[in-house]
Image (cartoon, rainbow, N blue to C red; front, side, top):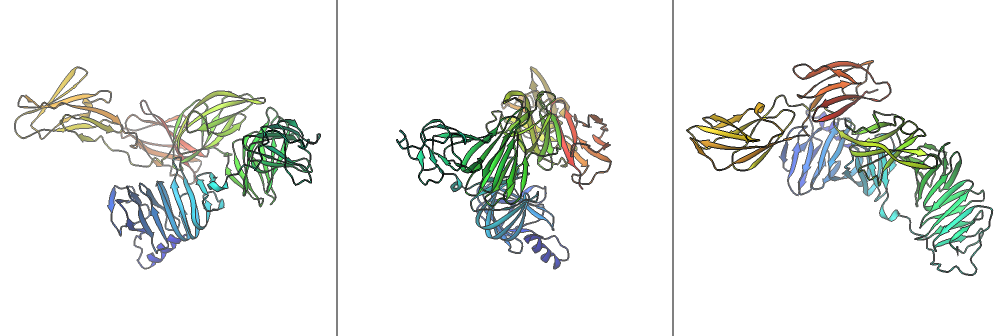
Length: 628
């Protein structure tokens, strides 16, 4: 039980079961608001209590909240939204916007995991793609993610935490270029490489060799050569080197240093290297704390990027497969697109993995919008025969694919898609190279459970004939429009014109209503008032705009996370114009826009996808997962 959960229990024992606060507003540098559950936001003053399910919001100034019992303080930055979720036994804070600093000693629940602080401070910032970035500013802290991974936080290092964990090192952890002298002309005593141990290709003027048993680094000329067993190599800024030994090629950039062991194995000591082997062959590269073994397929080679710093070696598989072996006995099999690290002490940690399962399948070429309570969906991209020798999917925030995530396969590829809008494309593996795009689309994942109530009937919006242009947002049904009249007594007429046609509505006031049935979202209207035959000179305009944030569907069942039987009850409601289906079978919708049906549980996908369709609004999928 976490620190503030303990405090809640102690208070509750003396309060006869009354609802107890989890935090209190103790300082404010500007306006602060409180949202009770999903209700409206209200101004919060010093001393305002926050309960489970509540949220706090700051404007241009910061604020400080004290956790019940004084166990911790939460410093909110300007323009931040913080929500207190979970249960009494498992309370959590979630930063939905902006960032906070959590200070205290004890164990605290976050929506992305549990953090154990020892007189420390961690900053928690919301990520645009979902999840949070956690940074240790002071003291000691250990983070246990929702997947059970335990991470010792380091001062200044940041972790992007969601369904996967990405470590971002502090600036001073970068590899510094090796101190190589500018060898414009190699000295006459430059060492000639010994042939027969490896093949070496030097580019640039700042590559140096340390022969076996020697202590003096000596410059190497550009061009081909060889490297003796037991020798070392370092590469300076603006230069590069390629070494092939035992069938493995290691490409080095500036700042890298490597050795060729007595067994003829390439060993990357520091810096960035690209290890590769041809098709149908194996190879390996040693790193501090273990080794990286790579293996090509029958059709294509394998490639991995290795980045070694003072603490660990970070490995990302670019082609083929890889296996990490730590000196501590750990072994990790890796696929294309996955990233992991080997620490100097030999421990292995997964940073980004390709899921072996999928929640939702999509055929390459389709674009879909997914409403997922989890906010991250394991998507299987089906190739549909486009790549006979296999292929890989690239996914990025934009269609330039400059920093894309990658996953490969023979007939399909799985990928974890977090909240946001993503572009994807499929490329085929062809012998030693890759094709261009053979298909693609867009994936939108929204963190949405689909259980917000939908409007029961169309609204009536009031606008004024004051010479302005009015834009009225609507959900699925256009609202009626009410226009107040000016003054009292007499006869009022409201003139409404569009497309060369005019319609007049008459009444005594104080308002004249235009029925929704007389309006269309496709038109822009001009309107003005007339009293006792005298036209008001102010002519106004009216247009409609669809409100995409308003719920279009309400899914009552199944409840996400509840165990499934052989059949699943699907029940809910939709607004006018929407249809529903599961597994390509239409769900009947009655006159009250309600639907109810029982469907078989999924056999391959882990999630049930409820498809909602609208002729103008498109298609959306609402996902539900069963519990254990």
